[in-house]
Image 1: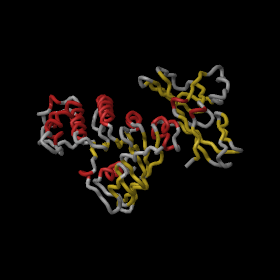
Image 2 (image 1 turned 135 degrees about the vertical axis):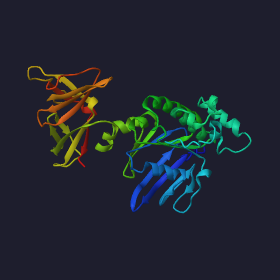
Image 3 (image 1 turned 90 degrees about the horizontal axis):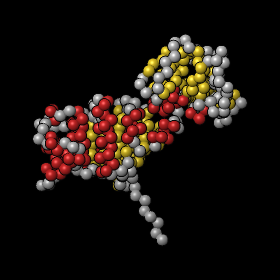
Image 4 (image 1 turned 60 degrees about the vertical axis):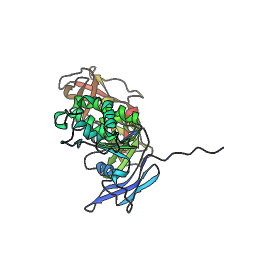
Length: 361
């Protein structure tokens, strides 16, 4: 019986490197995109993610490494297929609509053949804008312009869709709805999608796979749940949310803190470590005549602090506490309304299953 053939990735980047002015802005990037999946290239401004996208699109060329589409080499240090031959759709944060063309003409731009207007109108129906076919871009809202740009990018039936911060120009209330609509259309289309963003929430909301980028390198890849709950280092944890950091040092394969000891068998004695926990995983208890709750295996040993300030944010409350043992400020996020007065003495415990221990960099 003949073994089944495994299809190559729709888009593959192999060891891509690019430098400007002697500085390597993309440094050994490897990435695979599958049909029907959204991959988010996530990272802070200046980390190299937009340059990586431009190399995939063909508007920039790498110094070394390979770009392949469906297993076929389309670009390396010497070979370069032009962007218009790659079967790739592109969306940018400024939408790049032509102001002198109508909405229908914008969507039809780049299409070939006698059926251009019909194909363009079909895409406008998909995004719910057929009634604006004769309008011009300057008369549209930001959300409408974004949907026109999406229709134009999808009209040629691209195998791959590249998106560079396409929702950053929209206000927060509009953004969530437009993102969800866009994601539904892209999933229906079956294209392999690479979305560049610096917003962790956007990546978590849209991605099947996240590639976290820092200083030109991809430092961690995985499904949103895994990359959030198993960060590779302290910086990765901090990129997705606020964190509390409790310092310590390894001694006899464990690290002693005011919250009890943490097992660190893989680290040598004397190694400085950071114990990291997110604010929503701190547990607060009231002071009972100078006493707090009893230690438990799940929450460890409680430590005492005094409220510095408390703020209500709608769905949750943030409480900052100055710890008695070292004066450090730790932040807890409590569901609902919890507004203790400044100076209130409270006890904090750490959910042990939500703590990360990293060697201090």
